[in-house]
Length: 430
Image 1 (cartoon, rainbow, N blue to C red):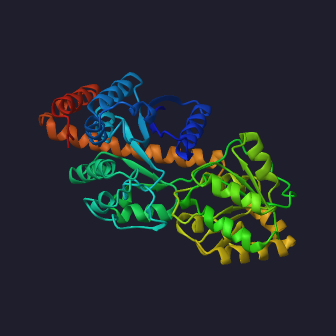
Image 2 (image 1 turned 60 degrees about the horizontal axis):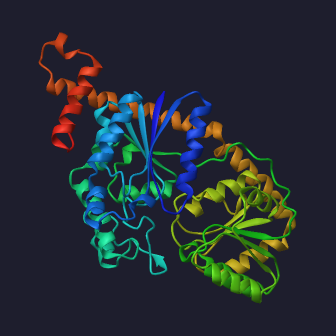
Image 3 (image 1 turned 90 degrees about the vertical axis):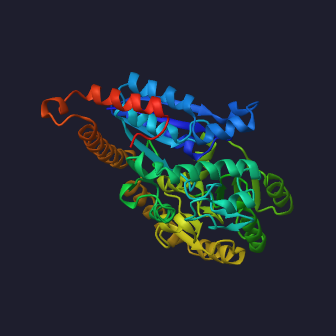
């Protein structure tokens, strides 16, 4: 199978970038021909705001480039991860014009919320959910703390909702959890086009010993990640259990200050991947105290793969991914007292923690291995290709003469007809 992976890299590397690399390696390992069509947001420096805004809504140049690549590579599937701001949803139509199936991974809530997180002013916000024009995001300057930037993303969403891009131009969507799927259906995405496929870890690491006698936080040090809740909870624990904090971000100074005043908190900042793996494997448990919904934190799967239980906020997808008493524990999001009490219960019962390690590893082996993920991805691709072929057949019947011998013309003729229509109109052909 020939696959083109399409992604706009963010200025700060994140989980979506890692998933792209993981899936590319997975596909190549099974003999598929994989190409990349990528842009990087670092290149926007110096671009005028007007040009950037227009391109985020409909970027003809990027669409033409992708169309040429998909044709050259004879793509069966073009799999999108992120199109904002340098690719745009116009690329869906470009991919379709070549006859390729179009798949879009839903790593976050961008198609329901301009900020992509359902998070504002320190709490969950769903004011834009279900609105054709997400005007609250503009009013509150949700995207990059800028009304103009927020207006650009809101305009992109509004235009493509109005011309029905998200319902017509994408053959299959990939959601990471039932929670995110349900939220995006509320936002208007077609439920019958959304499949479930979690993230995965490959190759499977050995289970960790978990004998380090400490808890671990791994992630960005930012408000939505619940870092303040974490620090307050450890202050309440009064040195009862060590905590290693790995990560960087806007709250790095707060973490550094807490580590200076509390000997139980060790601020490690950025460390190498190998060091992360070592620390995670020997941690008694990982703490994920996010106060936003999250999409599908890959740190959860990485922790489970090493048999390390995860303590998560009982919120959004996190509550769905961790089973209390089996693979970890829940606490009330933003409630430092509840987090402190949960940690006390865990460290008081070493037998339960030991049993959780075995269950956490089993959870990984049942759900999050490369082999299981590959089977799911191939099933999604197959469904997308069937859907695309059915649409092409309908289109051929609508534009071809009734003569059955003419109507059964070559696929290349059909593709060129659709492509010409796309090039001339610059708009959806259906």
